Image (cartoon, rainbow, N blue to C red; front, side, top):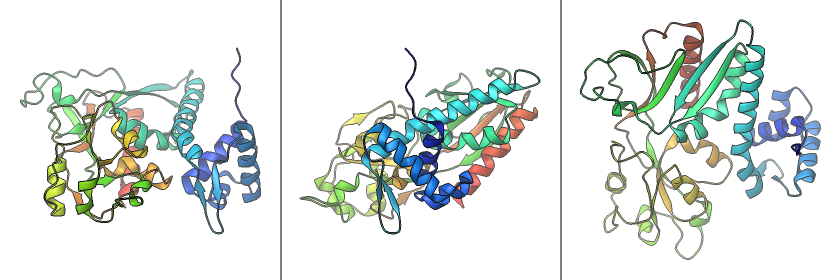
Length: 314
């Protein structure tokens, strides 16, 4: 059965407008007029049967349907871009395998990958989300040098301590942890106005990082906020990167790495209610075998990733 899909131009217009929260800026990026962007989005809304934006006087805001559609659409556009790059690279091209933690891949890397494939159409990317931490590879944590376990032209992004003898290591960024929740929790019977109000709310426990993670905990954040009388261990536990989804659905409040929620905050699905953070104990690193570190595709991805991280933190 053939796939029934809306026009690609409408999907691109929606993604650009959702990223900028502006039809004008989306139009500038796509080299069309704001009216053309608006028309493409209206066609998409008619095709779906639901509004994707709330049109306000000086801004546009994603509806719940638009915010729910955006992450999967970005994954699809990134996959399509990678597929086109693979097709163009059959002659004289090269494949680059990128492995990353699932949360980092879906919430930070994928929304940016189209820019890399546009810059380097000769490189066919293959992205794999893996929860395995390189620190868990035998002997690495103890500091012994090991042979590279990576395939040819493979790079790995890991959240850890950065001590990987035998590999070339480049820090991407060390993200702070913040509290995030649905905007709905700022209203209601017990609105979340101060850290002390957490006693009325569910603390979501994120087990996605695994039992060996050195990430700061709820106890660390509550201590930094000066909150007493709140049990940091209470609340449901979620693995497989479902804690953020639970927070977006209004189940409770989650402690999360700040860069991973930028898209959800921009889309209005999450808010950061307090200007209080705890510093990380670990960081995201790009880990590359010495034998492939200077190959053009690997070097190009490394330089692009560093530039994206710098722009994100500037």
